[in-house]
Length: 154
Image: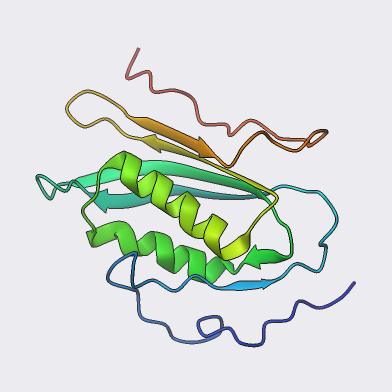
């Protein structure tokens, strides 16, 4: 088993300030020592927070990101800080969800990526946002994201 090359990373192992906006956030990547092997990596952020761009009130989501890496992996601390950067950022649910996915695609050039953003209700209506780069690779074992649709108290 080869050791992952972490040279050039600026946040891992360092005391890093949280970015104040998603645009300022630095996403970092490391070489995939299993490039050429098809597998799914999943990140789950059950406590994602952003702000409503109209009212400034907090919005909450359970976000699941699945991707099939190519040559690169996202460095998880940088992803955590990137997601945290939305905490004081005003944007609609759809904008946050798709922006996250597109930033990861631009960084990693994965074989495939999808995001499921399950937003908690505001005004009585939950909004779920789904986006993917295309059809999943043939033969890929892709588990369900495991987040049930919103049912309220019923």
